Length: 499
Image (cartoon, rainbow, N blue to C red; front, side, top):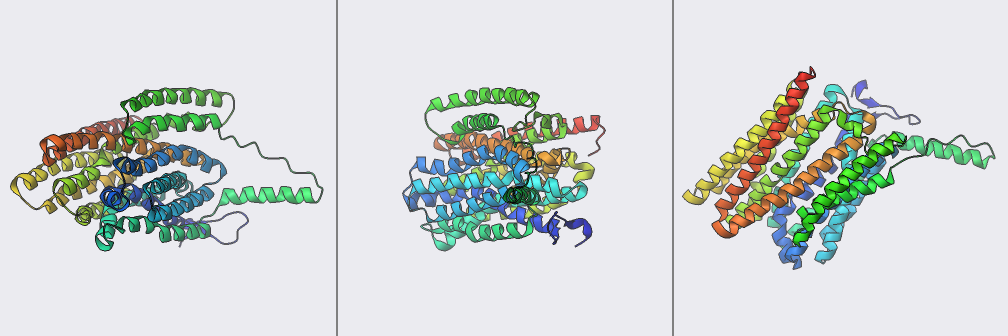
């Protein structure tokens, strides 16, 4: 380990190593994303194992997504202010305990309570990951770290269904879904221990030492050193943002009364109120929940827009894949997961390769990556037609989905680096929370929209039409994401940025 990979913390003799920190950060991100993607193949066995209703199953999906999305921005802001390591470790501990609750849940109600807690824990630690990468890495080292993060994201989304399907096939439908939750427990516990040992907790140590000095001075009857400036977490801004995100996401995640859709314009109105409040709060000399100056960085604004739009389409690729092969072709949960394995392998390779070139031609990589996924989705429609109409093996679908992995891995690695490249380290967690919230909202909107397209066609014209229509909508959304990426490329060139 060279000196440039060593971090020193005031008051601590031993060194901390950047790549040990990075290892600690990657595992929980993987767990959080697998908790999203693996549930797709587990829902039928949860229904039979717990006697869950359609409403119960909807909340298994929605509860996690909602609490995850609502928590991200406040958690990023609090981590930037109080210390990212402590919030990361707390979030991981909550996620781990909640995973245990999911795996042991005797009723659908307790399963859903645990899923809410899982989402809360994931929302606490997720923005700290991006904040700490910003804090501890720079230049090409940061690009390498984000390429690893992009690899983990791509592989986790693809490997989640494989893991759940393997557990269900090995243990059986009655308890296999439980194992897909319980496997997080030993991994999470190991992550908490390693976080306590390997993370520097620099800001937390300084706050603790400051408090200890004050207590000691008071005990000796000495004058207490002047307090630091009051910590301002903008409580009204926090409430407004959480309410806005909830109103926008809820109708897309909870199927129910048509009146729920009135929450979407209410959420947008709350978002406008929040923006006005943040500007007023900052003008009064306070620290807003999100400093809107973040959006003065074109790379952050464009990158967040690309990411959010991309997630509207891309997250549903494997949701529709699981529905098509399981409900349309009668494929087992294990096979439905296994068919995405080539995607995971290719994603990992593409993410690392893109990370090596992102500082030279990152925006060109982003444009090419999304265009590749569009072509792969159109090719998947052709292969699905051959499967249904001409009886070729469904395993051929692994080919276009592997090509999807080429684009997914490249995009995740490159766009993450470019979006945060100009963001100041001090607000890295908040910026990460904003970006992740855009992704979570995109996921909720995309899943609701595209699964509705699938089921509407499935009930009337059959499995292939449902798959085709869904993938055409996905492709249209990704074309929009491509146009945003091209806009980012042109804007960067006008600023004189080569990559």
